[in-house]
Length: 107
Image 1: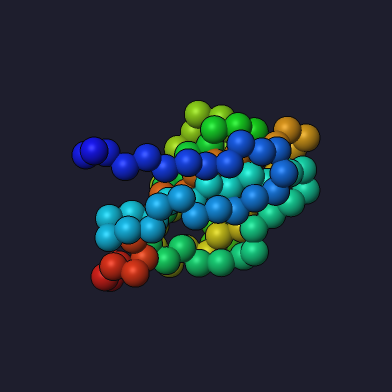
Image 2 (image 1 turned 120 degrees about the vertical axis):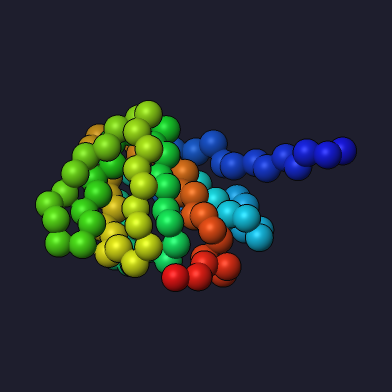
């Protein structure tokens, strides 16, 4: 078999799960319920967020909060302060792709 299959959880409960962590990328699947958030942190690679459900509230560095909805793909540069939350009623679900994988990132 040439291909490799990965699975991710189908849930409406808060979740952060690692899907792929290889030499090429780091891929996480995340679900945030209303009024939940991720801890403030700095991006440790080039980050791409793919929104597949709901509305994300995203504050980067010192700028104001921006809203992103289902179908949006956001690119966040290395070493950017990030605050990610769900302030909407609908469950927020998204994938985070880091490329290169942070363990292989070179500035």
